[in-house]
Amino acid sequence: MPRSEYIDVLVVDDHEVAREGIKIGLAATGRCRVVADVADGRAALRAVRELEPDVAVVDMRLHDMPGTEVCARIRELTPRTRILMLSGYLNEGAVRSALRAGAHRYVGKAAGMAELVRALDEIADGAEPASALDVAAIVKEMHGGHTASARCAVSPRQEQVLELAAQGLTDREIGHRLYLAESTVRFHIQRLKTVLDARTKTEVVAKAIRLGIIAPALEA
Image (cartoon, rainbow, N blue to C red; front, side):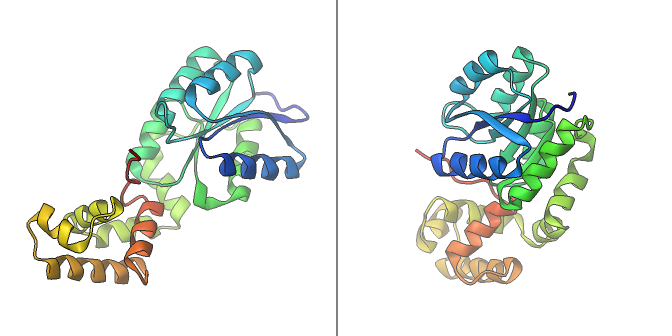
């Protein structure tokens, strides 16, 4: 993509506050121009057809279709438009699926505006797409190695406990689902607090999602 005075950006995120924050942050750089912001995949595809932006910043998790589907369809509609996938959680599976769908870069929401702008600059300067072969290295770099160590320390059973806790189940309900004593569930939660350096069960779940150990619970 040849570098012009501005990077024309389409922002796709179903949370209005997130969209506004991204727009304000990009405008402050003086290098990015948000040509449209939309809340779902269908609107994103319409905007791409009409505007052909340089870059589409697409949330991985939209309410009408997966971000990866939006990414693939944008690539079919306007190959010149590059996609930067934005996500609230990071794991190798999510990054790999985004890159396979045609995303140029993958940035975690927890990384902050500076990382988002850096990735946009790389795209505008003609950087090659991130390779699906380098997924593990990409995730490690984004987390400074913490994700890998945390995942190794969390057992498969503890991941199951985390997933159910993320759905809002109590310790008793988690035990019933997993055929564990309630005291055993509490033991796993305490162990996870140590591993993830968290003080409460809620913080344990939030950190596990942020580090990509589990995915956010799907909304009804």
